[in-house]
Image (cartoon, rainbow, N blue to C red; front, side, top):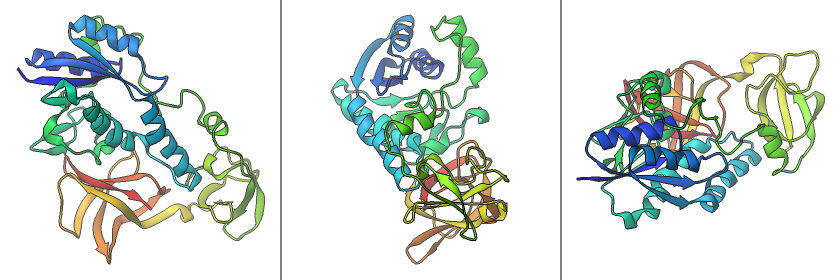
Length: 328
């Protein structure tokens, strides 16, 4: 019987993943990773007890703070919009998790992600509304990973969890950034000093004062604090500590972007026509991935709005997620 270490969060997805694997004949051990105050160890433990599987706990709070929260804050200071879920999957859930549990001698690890692995390649799940492939472009060791929810629908899993009387109801979806339980602005104010600067328009005219560039993102319209708008954030000038805005949305449109830190799940020869997601929850857009000298360029068939440095551009061919890169 193959042994599987299942990362349990205390939610429906990981709980049902454990249940499915057990029904398939695996020896399942539930492992709870202590990462932040938003994780629910008590619920995870109760679900493991309900399923009659072994339950372990590993404390990764220091690692999470160092590798994820600090990364998040440093990227904001640089003027970027970070993607902590992508980095957490790479460094915590599919790296440290494996390293910290080596003594348990498992054959596989598993999570409750909605994705499918076939022949060391990653594909979209059956439930397109829950597709999480966007967050998985930097993981490796695919021959040792199981995604048991790839061929399931979330609504069916919720119904099954109710039948099993999992202690997760009333049910609500997990929040976007797991380590920020409240307002992101309040979170940042406690951790990054305010640094006031000018808000200027595209012609260099000073319109107002901002409290810190990290409170804004490209394309933002609300919360800028200017009258006579609407104004859109079109650029963050880190060198001069200036927030650049415009009433004209044309300044948000780009035909191409530069990428760095490319990781291939299924390596391709360039140039290649692809579909790409440039933020989670967005529809895929058509484009060409090509190389200019040593630089990788993603050129869109149509201009795309509010492309944000620091976010991930993830590449698709049909239902397969083939890789990704960081937008510069």
